[in-house]
Length: 186
Image (cartoon, rainbow, N blue to C red):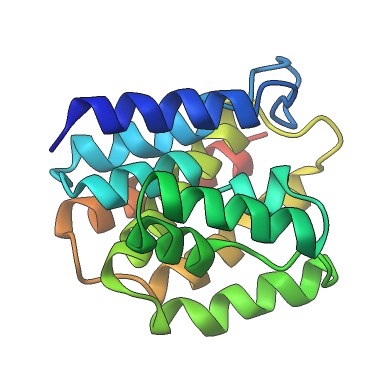
């Protein structure tokens, strides 16, 4: 694995997300999220370079590109500068933002079992990081009920991705239980 490619990907993702923050109260730079997802995958033994680059890019298309023309330009750039495989993984985990939120959420449940192995691992790591954020830095206006609904939805999505990295699966379960107990006690 080339460290250079990982750092190039990190710089590219940071530039694309530079004006974004997470939904939580702390005004946390958005780039912290893809870094956390990538770090989590690495922590649980994932060393595939395309997976780690895709983890850094997993929200680029849906959160930084507007309209079909810009999505195509960004997709071409990812393919040309990184690889077709990286682009394919990113596209697999990207939502179609032109659809209503509830439909996108439903499609994630349906489509996740059909994803590639690398995209499934990325999906689990992303959901783990989102659950941790729901506990530690939740979106400002989310009620406990909405947080619990997110938890249950995330579990349905992850159930379609299990079986590829036992430790990652177990960590999702651990985080889910911790966040669930925390929310039930608030």
